[in-house]
Image (cartoon, rainbow over all chains, first blue to last red):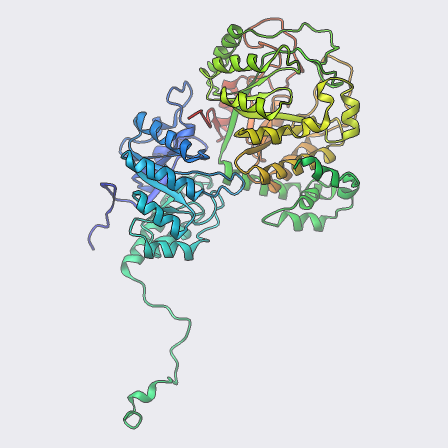
Length: 262
Length: 366
């Protein structure tokens, strides 16, 4: 089999597991997390980065080979997201930006309208925009038209670890949207990530499930394996499934009888 | 619409009788729900929940880790002024208390900011007494102009304002509001606040709402635990927080749990609040309101604070002083005695040693 390289925004990625930097007991774990997952892309919340920190700074712990994907966590409007994105680029974090606009702190669900507005403006400014959305076909189409480089639908609300609860909607995006689909949020176990990959998602972003496990480094490996397994299963094209057994008295068997067919 | 209309519906209910009649089966049923109602919260704070505290704590711990990770957000208070027109019976800055009054000028605020910022803290909570003729909106604006240079987030814990004044301060760089109702018991509130602008119960009750409407990113509410029965006040605090979450989804709502501390005065709290009571409150709030911030201040002992880190607490003050200019001026009077006297560095080191990341910065004015 040929190497399964994931190419996005001009970058060739050898791993389809994207990771985050939040919720770890210590930022010192980040290099080992990068190594153990084999991930190439890491997202970081600009709201928590203090470039002038006299205390620790998360950016110091991110290995230089990682592709940074700053995110706009904390933004409540498209304007805030845009300002965060511009600051990210101005401070040397590159032009990849994950747009998160959340106007509901209770459920932490993304605001599709504000996200689309920010995406439209930022793509014109040359950003590679990765919008985080509810898996809504219409919003996804707007984002395609706005110039997003991928769509990041949620599997379940952030931090819920509840798995791919939006499976049917994500499947529609996988079928219909001609951009990479990166499942983000809600993935609580490696089996959830595997499920998404098997269904044809191009990648998964996993943070909480790794950062809050009892053994994050072992969990990194488990997720890396699950992503590979799911991807391979997708490429191998699983056999058709059926809810019915093969009938021992087939209804159409007469077709093959000499007397049955005229 | 005001939260007062919700509160009024409960005027006839005696929360202690309600929580006293709950049995353990009800507690377990409430605990096992995915989404809890205020009645479920009442079950979790009931005496019947005491044998289940460990189970509730485990759930609270899991929820906290999922939503907030292995982190504790650190901040510190900065007392700007202790002039006050109120006569709150329980407060060390009560108008009648014979202490030296002082308000820092902008240069002194800057000196204080430098000392605090040198600890690495990026989030500051500024406090004043209730004396708008001294600590005016324009004075606070001047302070914010200075503080913005040192801190990425500024919260206020001052007298209740009209919405337009909150808007003015937001424009000056404030993004968080902390305001305590002190007690939801209206009769007791009236007694504890004999005169002064704070006497207006409903005006204070609606202040968190006005702050959220003005655009505050964070609103923290709470009562002074020990003024009334804790079960009553925490029930209404949770009800209030839940109401704010529902009506102002853009605002991050937090609950702070200050227990009354000794101060320079004669008021003795009528009710005792034990460590076990505090634990029950923390874990019940977390299970009822998974996304709600929970703050424990340096009023509490270091050992107790250490033990609450894994229960559901998300924010802690550190390196605190409750005196005006307490970091850079000498001989100032404390509002109350702090208990956990660890420096920011010591607090951060303790957290790191216990696999919890101290968060110094969680927001800035983008």
